[in-house]
Amino acid sequence: MDYSKEYQSKLCSAQEAVADIKSGDWVDYGFCTGTPVVLDAALAQRMPSLENVNIRGAILMQVPEIFKIESPEKHFTWNSWHMSGIERRAIKQGFVYYSPIRFSELPRYYRENVADIDVALFQVAPMDQFGYFNFGPNATYMADMCTRAKKIVVEVNENMPRTLGGFSDSIHISQVDCIVEGNNDPINEMPAGGPATEVDQKVAELIVNEIPDGACLQLGIGGMPNAVGSLIAKSDLKHLGIHTEMYVDAFVDIAKAGKIDGSHKNFDKGRQTFAFGAGTKKLYDYINDNPECMSAPVDYVNDIHRISCLDNFISINNTVDIDLFGQVSAETSGIKQISGAGGQLDFVMGAYLSKGGKSFICCSSTFKGKDGTVQSRILPTLHPGSAVTDTRANTHYVVTEYGMVNLKGLSTWQRAEALISIAHPQFQQQLIDEAEKMHIWNAANAHLNF
Image (cartoon, rainbow, N blue to C red):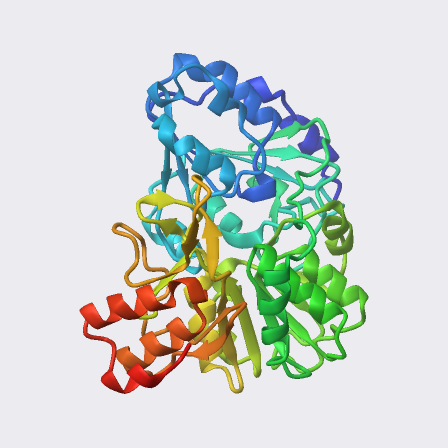
């Protein structure tokens, strides 16, 4: 069937596409690299005449034009499923808010709990011969979000990579109300980061030594997971599989080094499965039309039972802080929102349930505050207001440059002992003193010399 006539009949300008957005509407902006560009600019022109518009989105990779209008807080709210630095910095302006949820729950949440979305605006790859617009590396919850939208507007970008999955990776032209042809700007890149620091390298070495041939990997975002990926690419590991929420540049390096074939995966054999991808052009070029890469919705990828069915599952994630009870805060520091819950807990739990699986939470032992003082990431208790991303009952391995400990099943005094042993020596006595005050330091520890 030829869809060219239908395409032309739905083709319109960005201004026309957003013309019927009114005060009080709920608008979805798509996800990550799917965030609209020309549609956003058109809405920014209209926004000063509107009020109480509510917009959902996540992981912004460039500052939207609507953020730049005068007094944005008087006109709209931005409700983020997962914060990027752009969103985090805008919180103090009074119009950006985080929506706490496990990322894996979003497809069902849209299907069952979201009232009708007035307008959905998002970028897509060009329509194929069968009438489908691919979501690019953003399958996540997009298909389910579209089922709730009264009006769907797609912004076509010829540079959007076409990611293959088999289901929920595209939207058909019959479901689309308006088509806007964008500027075809390059897809926003997320830098892989600079060279690994000495701390990153030490943590990576400890983790890589725990990875067996044939393992299935999940890497979180950040310098340490990327350092692990770089070390894997240079290692002797082989027959690795990928099943990860976020596809990052490190996976491309590992694949090009010949370490990935997915032959040991219990399902989706031979395919690198992910819910979304963001990185450099190297990543976008690699996943484009690559049948080895499988884009799938986040309730499929992050499903704890599904993860647990993959043998030797290795989950590697960052944290902001961890306390002596083993509580992991990977999304806030006190009341300061940094990122979001994402799927970290799903992978922590799924990896532990996997046959031979391991979950690693990694961090530097210290960081420098704004005033230049060195501060410990291992705390007696989390800062007041900090969100607990991984509960103490779920935390498995914790790694700093000073070592690796397995907290699973340990009593409170054993946890305190283990975590203090991998804290920076400068803070160990202080942590011991605080542990004693909290009655989680056993007299038997007194002889230990850290």
